[in-house]
Image 1 (cartoon, one colour):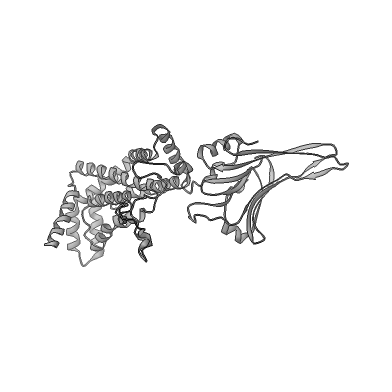
Image 2 (cartoon, one colour; image 1 turned 135 degrees about the horizontal axis):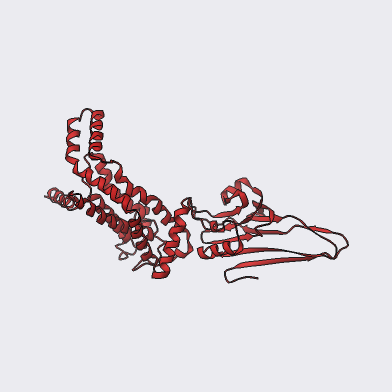
Length: 416
C-alpha cells in the first residue's frame, strides 16, 4: 500500500507447509548503484543516514563508507536510509523491533553499490502456521511538514533529522517554521524574510541598544583618546593603560560594537541552512528578477546586467571573480553606509581594513543565496536607522554625511 506522499507499507506473510519448524529473518534494504554526484558542501550531508536507537544520528558519506566498508549496529527504535539534498529513501521498521542495522559499500562488476539494511530477530514458524512481518519505506521529498507528520504518526525516533538542520538546529528549524508560517499568511518567502528580520531586530533591541549606546559614548571621547595616543606615542603600554582608565571612567565597553555582528552570526548561519536545505525554499520567488531565493542573484554587473552577451566567468585567471549581481551590490552599499556612520579609525592599517570590508563582503556574498543577501541588505538598512537614532539621542554627531562629504571632497582635490 502507498499513500499520496510515497510512504509504502509492506506486509510479508509466510505459511509453513512443511512438516518441520522453519526460522525466518525479516529483512529490508535500500541499495544505490554507482557513486552519485554530490554537491560536496561541508554543511550538507548526502549519503547514508539513520537514527539508530541510543547510537543517535549516524551520517556516513559515500567517501567515508568507501574507507570503512561496513558499519554494524545492534539497536531498537531505529530508521535508516540514503539521502540527497532534497530527496531521501528510508527504511522504517517497527520502532519496538530489535534489529541489526548495516551501512556498507560493495562492488558489483565495476560498479560500486551503497546499501543500508536491517535484519530483524528470527521468527520460528511451526508446521501449518502462518506469520507476517510488516515494515515501511519512505521514498520522496523531504518536506518539513511531511517528515514531522510521519515522525508523530509512526512514533519514529527523531525522523525530523532526515533534514540536515545542522549544529544550530535549535535556531534553524524554529526559524524555518516561522518563515513558513508567515509565507502561508503572505504568500512570499522573500517578504517573510524581511518581516522576520524586523522581528529579530525587535527581539535583540535591548542588546543592540546597549551596544550602540556604548559606541556613541566611544565617539564622544574620540578627542580624548586621540590626545592620549599623541601624549604616549612612544609608550604603548602606558597608552593602553590610560585608554583603559578612560573607558572605565566613562563606563565604555570597547568591544560593545562587536555585539550586533556577533548576534547576527548564528541567525545568518541558520538562515543560510534554511535557504540551502529545505525543499520549500527551492524556486521560491521574490520580486523582479529574483525567481529563486535559494539561488544566487542571476544578474551580473560585468555583463551590464544582460546588455553584453558573453560569459565573464570564461575570462582566464580572473573569470570566477567576475560575478556580481544587483542585490549583492545593494548589500555592499548598505554595509558601506553603515561603516561610514563610524568615525575613521586613527590607525591607517585598521582604516584600510574597514574601507575594503564592504567590497570583500560584496564579492563573497555574490555566490550566496539571494535570500541571504536580501536579508543582510535589509538588516544593514535597519541597523543604520537604529544606530542613527541612538546616536542622536546621546547627543553624538552622526558622521555619515560628513564622511560622505569628505570622501567626495578628497576626490575633487585629487582630480584637481
